[in-house]
Length: 236
Ligand code: SF4
Image 1: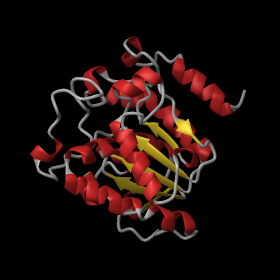
Image 2: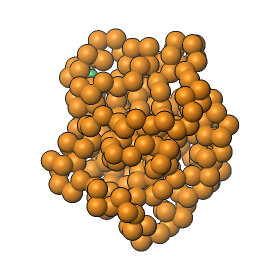
Image 3: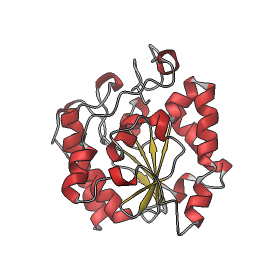
C-alpha cells in the first residue's frame, strides 16, 4: 500500500473532529497523484459526501468545463478540499475542524509536490494567505514554499454570479503559462508576508479567513436549497 493509499484510508476512518459523526463518506481527494497542478476547495457538499469524490456536482461540472478550456481533464489534476468531511448543512468550516484536518492536506501537498496550487474560494485561499481577501488575491500567482499558488473564486460562487464566472474563466487561462514556466512569478509584494517555517505555516494556515467585502453581499448570497443540500458554503 502506498503512502497515498495509507493517507486515504486514514481519512476514511478518521474521527478527529465531529464532522465524522454525520458523514456518509469522507472525501480524501481524487486525480493524478503526481499532478503538476493541484486544486484545493473548501469541503465536500451533498453529492461529494454521497459519492466520496470531490467536485461531482454542478460546481464540479463547471470546473470540468474550465479545465477543458485549457485542454486539461480531471485525470490531469489532483483535487481535494481543506475539510475531508461535509459540514452539516454545508456551513462554513470551524477553526477546530480546519486545525484537525489540516495535516492531511499538508501531507497531500508534500506527496504530490505540485508546481501550481489553485485555491478555490476564500477559506482555501486563507489557508495560504490569511491576511488578504480573495477579491484582492484572485488571479494573482504568488510564491509559497517553491510552489506557485493561484487563488480563484470557487466554482459554486461563479455559478451564482456571472461576473465571478468571467473572472474564473480568465484566471484559468493563466494555468498553462504557469505550468510551462520554470520561473513562475516570485516577485509578489506579498512575498515577505509568507510563512517560511513549518511552525509558521501551521499557524498561518489555520488562522481565520479575512473579512471579504467584495463582491457585494448579494453576490454571494446563499440559495435556500441547492443540489448540495439546504445551504451552500460561503465560498467568497
Ligand atoms: S473533517 Fe478531517 S479531521 Fe474531521 S473527521 Fe473528517 S477527515 Fe477527520
